[in-house]
View 1 (cartoon, rainbow, N blue to C red):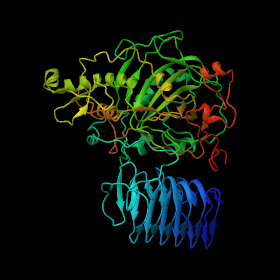
View 2: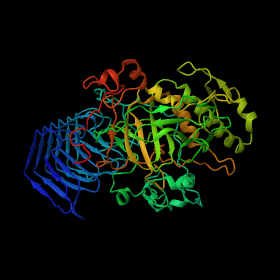
View 3: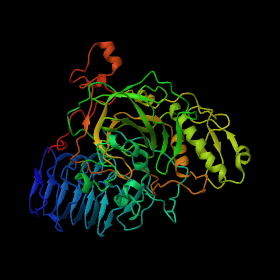
View 4: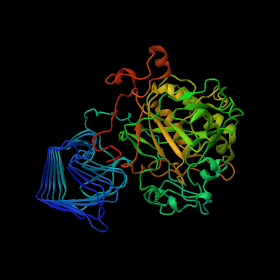
Length: 589
């Protein structure tokens, strides 16, 4: 294996053969300024790896490949996996295999690729033979493709769900995919959309702290978040009263993770085990004495923010039993209260490369210098979720307030347009409502469900996953000013929601109007996303807590054991995968 680690290196390799490496044969972590590493007349044959069996290059690197062959390589993601600039000409990719995606070439969220005069033949496995995160493909012509598994005759753009074919045409709809082998970590079932939600333009006079998720917006998009004064952001204003307890200066904007954290402390990330050192010794323990109130009662505040659907709770004393609280392991203290829980679509985090349709983040306050503990539940498409539906109902009530204030007809017109239907899960509370100037969407009748159910407990989602084990890492807020005041705990098994519920959440978030101004509030991008792009994490310490660290309290009481025996994880865990860091993934390499 070759590792190019120094930024002062300028490497050119000609005529080499890299064969039968058991982990990525060439790893490039740095490039010299304004220079690129080159591989010419080289062969990469029968190498194995996780992300890139032949070559893995990180953000900021530049590689040039000419007249080289990539054959019979096997990886989870790509014979070549790159997060930097990558140009390949007059080369051959043949008989490569991927377990997850990108059998020939896989680009991370920051990668850019140029391909010219290159042949792609019989690359098999799950996903597509060329897989991009954003539209970062330059076609220099002369490329051919035949016998490859995947949806496209060229590059597949994951977020846009589009193809860029080697013919050089504009991105177009994806043809019907051929049957593919089941990947090791199967993706969520595909979802259907009842219509695109247009991106709302930047306000003529953006309010202080304004930001959005448009990657092409160099003034307010994620690439420009670092320009926003920290003290103008909503996040700073919300947490300002707790500033003395935070482990970092909240008046500093740290959204430029490369400058602020050497790229290894930002959120969100792709979750995988890089640090085999879980320090937690028991499960997260919700306070069962809490008297959970209805969401539309006097305790919680239900809000539709520009970037999330939020349920906020008041600041209360330590002994309060009206606000949800939990005992977080590893010295956080017992029964810390939730500040707010918010839902984002799609999920910000990925797990072992797998994407999820939504996530819920609950922020927990600790007043001893640790900052905020955040527990996260990921969601995939599955069965109807009644607990989630209580929250959706409450958010819809807020959405309706804006709709009524900005519609001439008000309640009377809406009542006349209600039709009762049964959804796929047999839940008769769902309604199909036709809205003026909008598409039909699955919404329940607000007048019959005005209270949206009884007491609502966000910790119940953890019981739904049937798992108490998680990934943990030190990270940041996921919107400006991206303060490093967060310790994340992301549960390793997703909860479920129905397709109809996902459509409800999208409609509520993306079409909400401020009742005072009737302006649309969402700052989603053209991919219908309010998720910050994944941040570099090759040097992040992400620990994975398993049953070898602790078993659930219920199993403890039943078995008298504190941990499970090595080799018996499948008996004690809902998701017994990624138990030790994969080769090349250890944080201290």
